Image 1 (tube, rainbow, N blue to C red):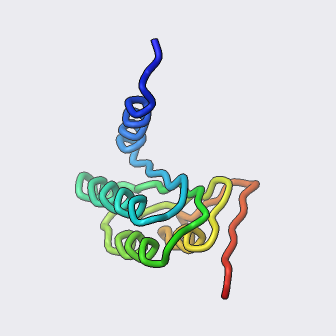
Image 2: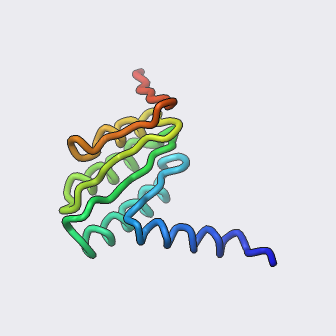
Image 3: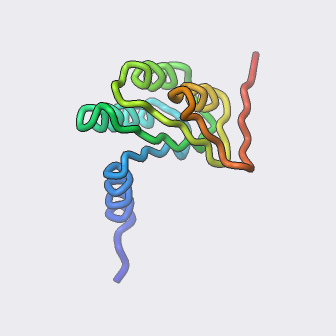
Length: 117
């Protein structure tokens, strides 16, 4: 039997949420920012002291989307650990650096890139 892709994605996302794991696996656009913020708020309200782990593999996106996620991370009661897998470019690199102190990690073979005008 083949499972519909949306069904599998939703089940996987639910399992990750239960483990307090969030994934930014694409561009950090307004929709991705809204999803991350709502998930962080949900996790923080359910247990304000337990760590939230945000895995980043992104090329970044608009400053507005980044600032919305960044501001939310800074106001949560729960600490947010950031873990880079593969890449964090542009605003995603800033998001990676915005993790709680001593809770910022990166895998061995990653690319972190900040671009300046």
